[in-house]
Length: 211
Image 1 (tube, rainbow, N blue to C red):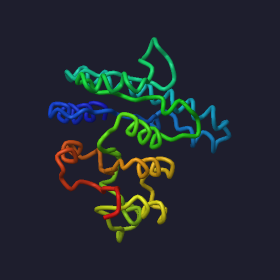
Image 2 (cartoon, rainbow, N blue to C red):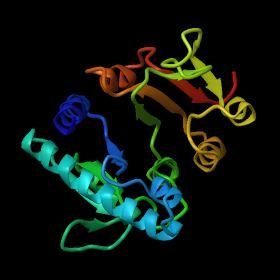
Image 3 (cartoon, rainbow, N blue to C red):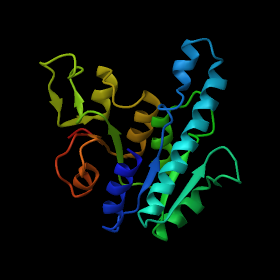
């Protein structure tokens, strides 16, 4: 999976696009799930943040093996492992043609990876957030459970909030809405999808200002 993502990012990087990646850690440890089992919420969230660093380093290694310069930056300081996240330094890496991998969430418990992506996107003035998932967009219901579910091609921020549609958590979505950052929800498992989104093809679901 890591090599698949790296290969897709490489193609986009070679198009001259600046790429920052926010990684999760759910495949290793998920804070919310741990809380349901009795873990202290803050402790569980910190453990989840550390899991994202493991994934970030794996992705950095895969990108570098593919010939793409990459830097992992973490919101929790661990200088022997990765650079601390500093906004101006992250922007400078992007300007120099490096892929920036943003790990350890926001560095605070109670904030999701979605919120991290929204916050970092606003900070580095990203043009768009690409939310990579296992489905090809946002549906009226779970398409794996409901065969009548239909896909939304486009949604407004307020429509998502008012209808309680699961795109991102409300904190992240509101941050995107307040700062005009569009979101494209797409299937990462389809090879070439990141490139298709960047090229403006109608892939997944676009969440943005109402038209």
